[in-house]
Image: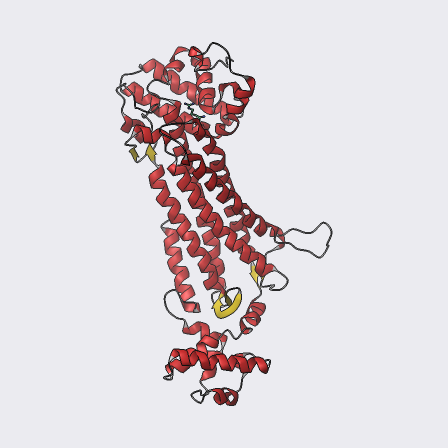
Amino acid sequence: MATEKLWGGRFDSSTDAAVEAFSASEHFDRRLAQYDIAGSKAHACMLHACGVINDADCQAIIDGLETILGEISEDRFQWHAALEDVHMNIEARLTELIGEPGKKLHTARSRNDQVATDLRLFVRDAIDQLCTDVTGLQESLLILAEREAATVMPGLTHMQAAQPVTCGHHLLAWNAMLERDWQRLGDCRGRVNISPLGSAALAGTGFPIDRQMSAQALGFDSVSTNSLDAVSDRDFVIEFCAAAALLQVHLSRMAEEMVLWASESCRFVDLGDAFCTGSSIMPQKKNPDVAELVRGKSGRAIGNLVSLLVLMKGQPLAYNRDNQEDKEPLFDSVDTAHACLKVLGAMVPNMIFDRERLREAAQRGHTTATDLADYLVRRGMAFRDAHEVVGKAVRFAETQQLQLPALSLEQLRDICAHIDNDVFDVLTLEGSISSRDHTGGTAPGQVHKAVAAARQALAAH
Ligand code: ARG
């Protein structure tokens, strides 16, 4: 097959071999092939409808592109680094297959609007895939949250036991992060789904093209409004990678808690044999490697975002070859998020919480101290005074090596005469969690309501 440069006309000598290897991108941008072919088909049909190419040429181009798509999907396509990128590999093969008509496909088009089109189609699909993946993980979380709606565990601030919460409530906090990620990806999709096709190299084209027509054929919502911007803009890649990085940060935070909860000192959860690995030297170990890898992989997503921001910051209008460097970080962010969401989605239903240990942990650290202060406020004391009194009660309990709820009524009354027997209703874990019975609160009834509301949100995904 001919591998002559499709742009070779004005050159006397051939490209330096090192330059050819340095500038080739076909080994990674071949991933855009299906989008490149879809874009070319839409472009050819539009050229035909506008009278730029004839029936026979258009049909030959469409048939040839379909043949190429088959070759690529069956791994029979011969890729050539000398042809630089996915676009020129496909175009050269098209001309090899169909002759003259193949050379007409690039009329009224440049690789600059071509690659921008391919990339937007790729990102659109990636968003749809990740939204499905996020929804899958959310579904798993909601089942677990419902199951653990009344399970009491310590809620932490500063990593110190703070107040009792329900495990279901905690899992719903994870779901809330993911719901925002899903929304963010959807917001981003609107700005991705705009057609740059027709912008050509940078200034548009003199051919009588119909940009709406090719945009519609490709499922774009609208066409870009400035050709210089359209060929050079990679905001949509950055925005997507920002949404992916934030998603990955959320997954990392979840993974961190899984690691913590599975640790020997907590033993709050069993992550399941299928989702843990052993040690090559310590026979007793069952390590939370999957969660650790999810946490570790978040670094990639953040790095990819930073790479892209830096890639763009110095670029003058319009297209510059720098932009070829946008693909690998983008692909890596997509693959990383997809893999992490898939593995977590499978892992979450296998998490078995040790309700007894969670409960014991919630009982340590005087976690209902705030409830006692609130009790005193309801009896007429100002909150700051109540805070002071309860602080004293905690100090006294510590000297007795007791938890606050274990103090006797006499001991409590010695500290504050306003306290009666009904204080024990609020000092218990159940009393504490069931009192937080409002939208967004931790009471088991609220967890059930929140799960139902979250399911409604998922139904709209
Ligand atoms: N491989 C190139 C990229 O990824 C395609 C566009 C090349 N355009 C050009 N004028 N050299 O950006």
